[in-house]
Image 1 (tube, rainbow, N blue to C red):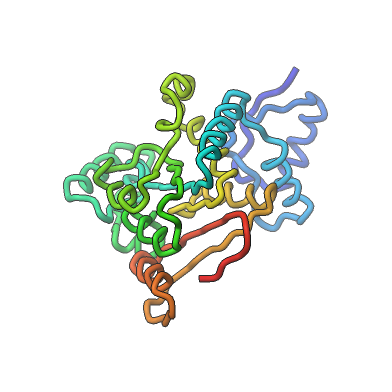
Image 2 (cartoon, one colour):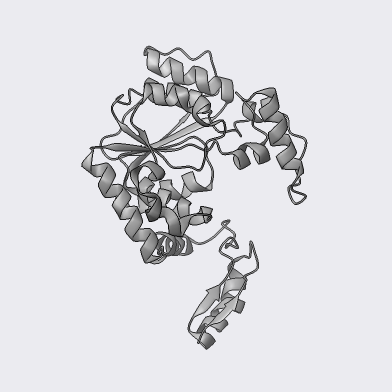
Length: 286
């Protein structure tokens, strides 16, 4: 027997101690049926923070179907050598709700705006795309991402696994990336359609597959500092002790001696963005 309930979002530790703990003692198993309702992450004792990490990264598990298929994708990639996972946040919903339209045509920008207005629950309707980019709140475009990977001397033959949904603009927007790195793959190209049949129309389960592959990647590159990037970074550090580097460039007048570093700084001066990298191996400085 277990008890199911939605916890109150953003509750402090007293809520869980005074209201949730007695229920656990009574029912032994408590099903929190809204996983987006979390414990407020401010001013918690270190012991609680450590417990959060152990729960998130050691106790929680995906279903066996997701775990097994994720392992299969990883085996396929490993057979062909090292691989980089690119969390390319450039799907239509991301662009519509963020208002980031850099590189989009006028027609595409209008389509994204219409989509945003079509959802009454989305409060932010009027968005200045240029200002949002200057504030560092937009993902890198596929074209910018290709430049960054080249600037970092990522080998042209490296497998680039795209951990994302359908990229807005399709092949046209991916052309620069696939030209620079022809070995671009995704789960849909590595697996048979029948393998993914169970996961179709379940975007969270598809994202879970990408999550598992991201954990085992030799290099993980998110183009946007969102929830997926944060959780993968944390998991890699907690379980696998992968190093992580965050590159932040805000000024364009910094002098660099290496061309590839200067190239990165130009990209990020333009977008005021952040690139986060983590990988196995020794620490590199740029």
